[in-house]
Image (cartoon, rainbow, N blue to C red):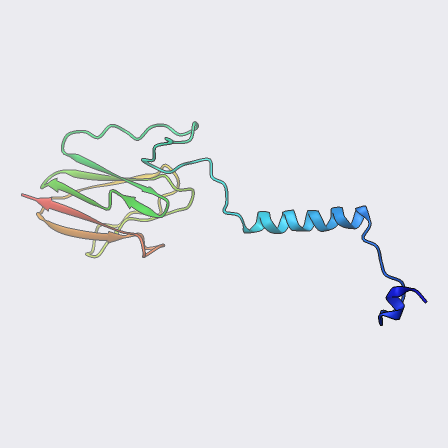
Length: 146
């Protein structure tokens, strides 16, 4: 009778072979990789690391206009202030679609895919709030002064 059987075990003790160690190690690596955040080749719109090498720089903003980037599920900047008659443009820098949907009727974009742009000229003073209708936690404001 061996020590394992004498201690109450059922049969001889099993050794962990090098093959079993490698299988266990592979399972651990895959499990840890699944828990890690996804890698991204883009640091996001307006970040210090800059845009990915395949993307072009944001367009120059002409006088009487403001630009809002959509990146990392945020409108950036979240609030813009313009004068009556000025235009605001939104460009989606995310890999997923977003919209620009205002509370009032009439100002709604189509679904903007990566690098799509939507713009609107504001002809009345006021504070206009908007969201992404796909992701309603995303919100922004356009303040129009006279």
